[in-house]
Length: 588
Image 1: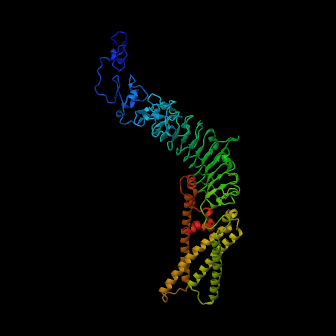
Image 2: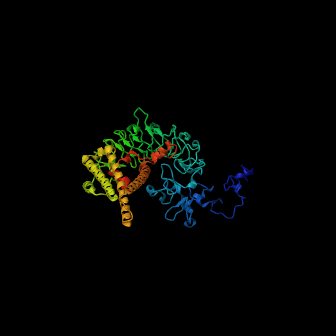
Image 3: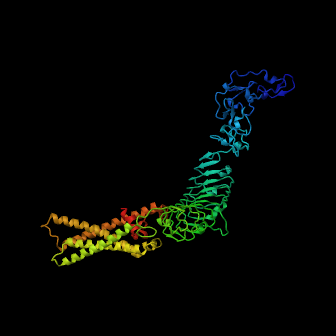
């Protein structure tokens, strides 16, 4: 122990030579040997402190000489550290956290000027305050924020496999959430974390469990959760009542799940504040109103790239506040006349077919809704043949094909009295017959256009799925094949005649037999080529129009084994109306 010279106090040796007079006569500091050099600022009592401790509203010198800022000259502060700012124009440096804190610290009160537009670029803004704190002054044991929030969660440790920024975590591995009860933001995409691993918290506002192989959702208390991302999991059925426990949920993403069944089990009327719902890339085939009966606040609904085939009368009955509806790249074939009449707030509609943008389906909204859909070259909402040019061409080709080929056939029969009928004549008759049948196909299309004129929208499905359309389409394709093969045979026959006009007779029955065998072989080859083309077309439609999800579902049902029937033509491709020709014939 150290005894003061006046013998009035006894001090511990840790209080001796500490730049503070603890003895009444100051004898504990009289005999101390001080360093000759001071890197920083030397207090009047001899103590040495860093320059950034000057004028920081904290007494770092025992005699408080470091806070006597009026004595400092401009030359002493050549530049301020990043934790400080300079009082304008050439005053001393002050810590950033005294700027806009409601206390005048600069001589001319410049530190409290323009606080309405003051920003914290690169600093931490205190809660409900204009005060900014440098990271070096956070968790330093001295609260600088009015609510002391710069000293909160200082013992928080970032879990292994996570990247942390404050209370926002991006994790690629599972971790114990009980160690971070104040977590605000969690992106656990692909981490394998499940709802069973979550801990109840009143702080979490944003959560992503996408691509975590989830099949079942467990109840969890997250009262402040606003955004939930469950995309790209393995959820095949879902009770939407599960999300009613999240009282503040605004955004829900379920895209990429093999969802086949969606329902709401609540019988009592309850309403969720959910405004955004993403059901894209799912396996839903029919969308009914009961699925979202408790989510009347939805404004944005995404059903794109799904297996959706039907929209019923009540599909949007319970979600009448929808403003943006995405139905692009779906397989919708059936739409009730009044499907969209409940969507009185609809502003934007993205559709997979021009039919969904027809005024007949949107009678009260036609002039207000911005509708985007692929165009149909031939058909429109009113007519099978949308343009007058197409109408005129179809009838012109029909008349010319029928009359011209009938004349040629009759003319050939008149010459039948000749002694021998050449192979050339037989082939020409076959060509005329096939072209005549092509003309009958044009006649069927022209008559159908007249029958359904100004109301084609309501009869398109019945027409394209009817036996007449399918049969005429089949005949058309066969006639096209026969015409091409016959022309090829005629060219080959003429070449042989020109090359060997005398040495080789082309009028015998044997040559007719050979030619028929050749035709059968070519026809078989052509049928095989068309079958292959249709299979490729079906696969392309599956992948591009909506149905990577549908194809994936089919492959899963087959045990991930490709079978021949997986690529067999669907009923849609067996009816060759003009729109079908556009997709599968003219495109080739």
